Image (tube, rainbow over all chains, first blue to last red; front, top):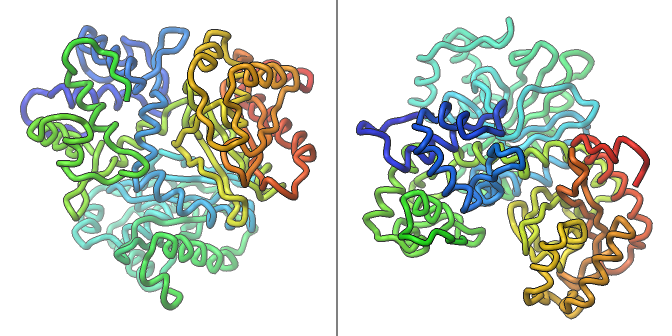
Length: 258
Length: 258
């Protein structure tokens, strides 16, 4: 949780720290877990958690532990970059999934990561480590390379100036190589990412444009590292990305194919 | 947003009131919109919104208006009744969708409503007014009848004691009739809801059981009012519900068919 307030954490900060105490690995927490993870006194945590629970932002389980409540999920479902984007994209992701039965993903950029807004996985598709609401380093993923390639120069420089985490021996981990790849992605309008996240998988990703013709998201299809000719998937991924862009009202998607 | 605190609203309440100001119809709000809808002084709203935006719980758009932020969506994606349930259900909902190309829905009970946690809609499926994160009165929907039928007696009585909103001329709006229908649903293990939400659609719904064999959710398939023999869909819906229950670890779904 970034913490840019200079003075002592406000009550607003404390509330967000309580929310931030939950993680994919720890989605159900006791009061003392919450106190420890939010770095708040037990008494403060008790008071805040009590109020959040009364309002349904948190839910208390039978075993006395707490989880993120349905009320918060309802509020968050109004996030345009979350559920809003997802609702527009879903029919096209469905088509892509049905045509391939591989993993289909929708992600947005939150430098230096990508956040997965949607994922459709066939029961027999290659396993992927991403999850809806989860994040991975942008430079290491197909969707991330598409999003970075289309991000403002200062955003790209920020990522290029950081250490580039290597998930596998194939991950792009040098700034020079990343710079070249981003240029290629801008030229091609799509990217093929080869075993950069896991050695078992590769992906094809393409950009999704918003109302102002800027790239607001990216979609990808993730397939096993062996046995699939990714070239054959490129047109399908680009067509789906274009369909989503059109449904978002992107002028360029209403004109010529990109 | 319910407001059960007796004393003056605390800062925690104010933060939740700011979140609660957003709605499906108003997912992007100006500072003054937020102040008015949250019933907070502009200065207070300005301070809270500033802190929430700094932490990413809200996002400020180019036009200066605010929307629910990606950070909050990530936190909310950890809600076990939201994304957690959805992740387990998705492969089975996929199968149901592919087999029928009709609307497939997953919902949980939040008395007196149902909240839709997932929806897969074919581009040519009959239109439905539900949306992911949205809610409808439980007594009027197939998923709601399944959830109410399996809810504790006091929950049922609470709903039966309230006025029952009639969405259409077919909506169950008398307590006596609702009582009979709930008894039937318990006996049958599924329900066919006929034009109770919209006159254009009908649905088949079945219960999803959790680890403790209580009903934690319901799924339904929504089809046009005419031209589909719903009986033919009952086994598919019940099988999918059972599959989800099994993936949630429901003992009864690991034993005999229900």
